[in-house]
Length: 165
Ligand code: HEC
Ligand code: HEC
Image 1 (cartoon, helix red, strand yellow):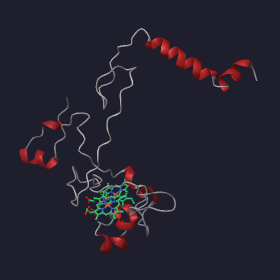
Image 2 (cartoon, protein in one colour):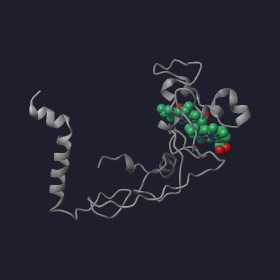
Image 3 (tube, helix red, strand yellow):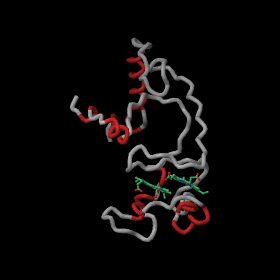
Image 4 (cartoon, helix red, strand yellow):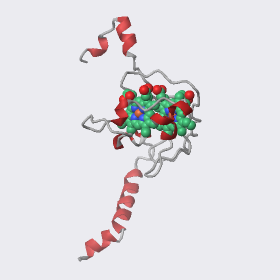
């Protein structure tokens, strides 16, 4: 092994890189940060993280924004474990528990493998529920949203959304 390989393997490489990035930052300390969740500040400033919002916990299912949307979760999911050995969502949402839990059953698509073969239990590709279903909070919007429900568009006869820019 030559000495260059030894230097980068020992972690000196990343240190040198970090040092040179700091060098680039020096002449532009006021570069504004991206206009994302943490508004204001500069690119090189560390601002305090916004407070994590409380999740909405209600008993009502929400309207879906479009038919294929995975419905959002109306209840809290704190400490519901999902791993190789257990899936706590399925304690309530599995077919056989729904009479007791009052939870809606996972729909038939959740039993299908990628060839649309219906399996006896939840398909592995639908096992990790929160890949698709998310709880909601009352947090202020990080970015604006001009989404219009298709039913509203149909009702208004508004087809301008479909035109090429
Ligand atoms: C203790 C039982 C219970 C557990 C555990 C549970 N749920 Fe629920 N879930 C419900 C009930 C009951 C509803 C119906 C709305 C209500 O009453 O809150 C519901 C509603 C939902 C809905 C909305 C369905 C719709 O059509 O709008 C989704 C999505 C959902 N749960 C996902 C999950 C996920 C993901 C987990 C695991 C992280 C989970 N649930 C764990 C009981 C449960
Ligand atoms: C790959 C994305 C994906 C994953 C993973 C997933 N879902 Fe869904 N889920 C959807 C979509 C999309 C819908 C709405 C259309 C449909 O039924 O397929 C839905 C619908 C639902 C509904 C409403 C059923 C109804 O008939 O109203 C419930 C409840 C639900 N999912 C629970 C779960 C639970 C619990 C898990 C974990 C075991 C899970 N989902 C995993 C995408 C997903």
